[in-house]
Length: 380
Ligand SMILES: *Cc1c(COP(=O)(O)O)cnc(C)c1O
Image (tube, rainbow, N blue to C red; front, side, top):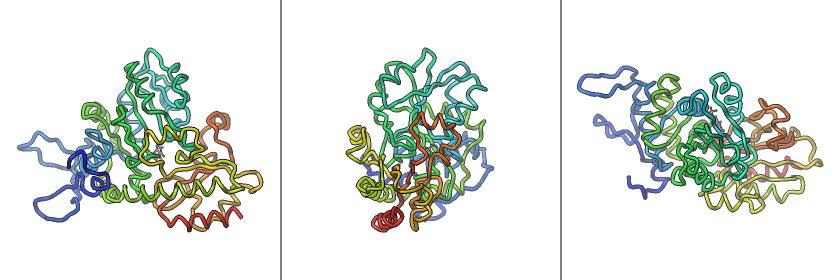
């Protein structure tokens, strides 16, 4: 397919495996862990990240992210930890933005010191300040935009210029935006990562992850990835491929719903603050317009004091579900302080602006008016 092909079409067709034995429209599932080796240089094995069902998704995601190649992992954290530990060594420094996904933050603060890898956390929304955290041994800059859970944005154009100036590689966790709403590679970011457990899988029933990059960087990571062994099995690959066919359709609807819900919540007297990049009140709304194709389906909000305690509100909801994780077809709400960011200390949470009253919502594909009616009755 040409590079002009639209994302909705790539979602359906790119990478589909066609077999000579059967003219079916769907990829066959190749479950083999033993592959013939005579008359071929290929050494195919699931843990080498090269079985056909992994390849087919890597092709689809690479096309959606405008990258050259990809690797498909058994979780988002497998993608993050494998990629980081493939690219840096003892004595190197990695610069992270301060409000990281809780699991990533926990990984670097617990495991990096044991390997002698240095790191800093700094506010990437302020590029001048962020620059000051770059060191002589900084090998990689790692960011998330929009961030979890406050939907803060990093200006990708400025970040890329900074990284190029210092000759530092860049990696972004693009999970919140999905490949439909943001493509950092054409903007100059080196590596894009997704927790496929979220929008890519989209139905809250599979755990997987992916990275997309240049052929050269993917080859470099592949060697270490085979040692860590966090590849995805063929059956789950097929479920992911099936999900990806509707990715554009789902995310477009989720994004539209989120905009309407954000506007509803912002105008509600019992809501103190709404964090959503699609609102004119978002401090970085202009950056969102410049670098995102859509504003995404994640939003956060704080109830004001009069609304009573958060859990009362959550228990009154009939459609939106108080549940963890995100990116599925169903609307879910959680309190970051007791879920995604529970592993941070109260001080660390305060430093990144996460109050106990904060609620994070992943908007689904339900009829938006039903959701608004549900919030109206639960807010009382
Ligand atoms: C869920 C998530 C991860 C980790 O992915 P898993 O599939 O749970 O391992 C990383 N980053 C973000 C932004 C996430 O939401």
